[in-house]
Amino acid sequence: MASKKIYTCDNRGNVNPLDPDDAGVFIPVNVGTLNFESSSISYTAGTCFKNIQFSYSQTGNGLNGDIGDVTLTIDTEDAGSLFCKDWFFFATSSLQHVETFYLSGKHIVTFKNLSSDAMAEIADSGIRVYMFCDGYSDTLISVYNSVLCFFGGLGTDPNEPIYGSHVPDYMEQHNVKFLSEMMGYNLTVRDVQDYTAEYDPSLIQSGDFISITRLDGVDPIIMYGSGSHAGHSVMALRFDGELYLIESQDGWYWPRHGIQRNKWSDWIQWAKNADFHVSHMPLSPEARARFNETAAQEFFLRTEGLPYGYHNFLFGWIDTAVDNWPPLLPVGFVPVVFSLIEDFSPNTTNIFIT
Figure (cartoon, rainbow, N blue to C red):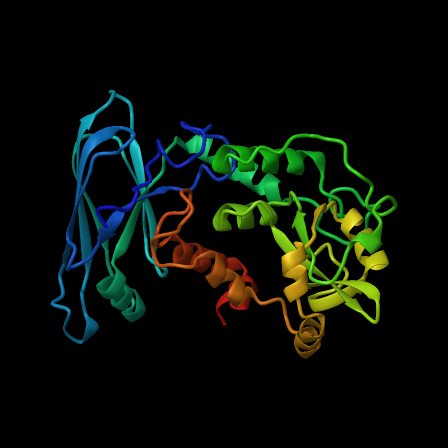
């Protein structure tokens, strides 16, 4: 682990320091994990205290899974100013607690009456400790700006503002800024073709890649997590000479769901309604010579109608345990987030993990 890059408040963006009000910046940074086997952490990257010691103790002996009550002792020293503070998020998938420390000295946080599931998780994976990088107001503003990245373009009607299929200007601007500051991917305004009228579909052949970006919060998150410059992938495939576009789709702005094929004339209008940024990337001559159109057609017909595939999506995005996490997303944070989401939207978590 010594060779792994440790992300702190000062190095987790493409532009540092990050604007504390920007989308995503509210997410805390990883401090470490505490349990019986890893009972202490020394942390020197606090925004206020430059020397913070965390220690773990439990009243139970661990027999039959009983760890009893858990006590975390936090010693804060070397404050940067008289009125500064550090605030932390202590979490597992079954318990979450936020604590703020204003004063130097010893602080105690105790977790009592733990469920058997909570005790088992702490014994196995520990309590994760995260630190928020900014103050309360900046953190709340960042949450608000993060919501604006996603709020809009929620329906299929192209004539309805905000709740229709088009991406509002404010939403687009927030996502452009996110991609620039977090990935260094700078989108510039330029003149483009109206592909519903001007692009010749005869130029598109089976096997060609159609790269999609929709500035709707979801695609930029996919781009950020995967390191790509596209948020959705589509492939051209001709059946009896007619051009179809095939994809796995579950967008709320899209008329159909699951693995599907759509005629070019239908697809291109839906793409325009959804404010897709579309790039056609033809196969090279060498790749086109190797492409087996018949085999591709047969595979598609076997899988047509299957659901979107959130399980493959999740584990393709998070493809290693610790080595390939995007800087804003601290290790171990995903189970905590899913647990919080499950409290008010269990169906959202079910599509990923059941």
